[in-house]
Image 1 (cartoon, one colour):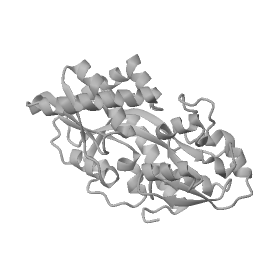
Image 2 (image 1 turned 90 degrees about the horizontal axis):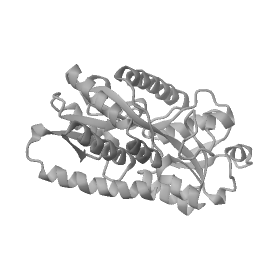
Image 3 (image 1 turned 45 degrees about the horizontal axis):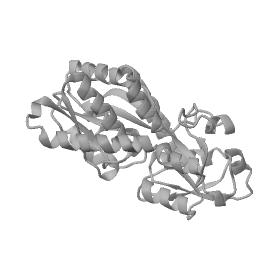
Image 4 (image 1 turned 180 degrees about the vertical axis):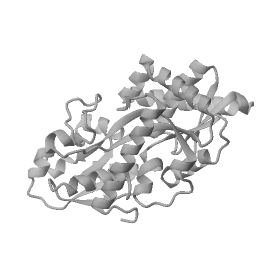
Length: 320
């Protein structure tokens, strides 16, 4: 993780310098990240953008447009000219989660954005503070404690969905405690103010390794290569079709020519095959994916169906 942070710092500096020194807009591709610099999506964007710059001999410049849980940045891309010069690196929040949670967006993901490729995927983590007194998911299930509070970065987040569906399974009784962002949720978990959390995996790996918290399970069908000894929720609790993750995908403005979509898909797939890029991503807990645009479209349909169903079953709304 230290290596990942060092790499991120170097890439952040490089991207900032290149952004300020570029004078010809038609020689650069703008990579919109709908979150501030320093987060997980931003780190992935900078790693991939730097490799694309090397491969295509064109500057790929990361432009952070944070705010409104990613909606501001996504809206910028949705309203951009569809000429191949601007694209979005998005997470589930901007594309499927907000819609399922009933959040009103200033754009329509299906109408205004075109899928290009799935860059990578990282699990969410069920994380316990030592004071909770459990060191495994099975111990949590067997605990006599009822209505255990779990913190997440916010109402209607993918972490909220993961916790609500887990509670709905009947295996464990949980109460949602929404925070205003990942940082305050993690800080309170580390301090023991909330004893259980559903968090993105990358920010908690170092704290897990140091013993400050314990990752009980991850929320994807397969174990994470970053933590191969940590089981999945599905394998421990036998919860059917339980899958929640933070993924990073590329989208272009609707109307972007098919040849530009194909070119970008090909370049990103090539970047994801580079051993150094793969190592940087996996060191940060992100499993590279890649694939065709059609495969990404199919993945998105499954995600939308999963979150829509979960929202109805667990009565998840953004105002909870």
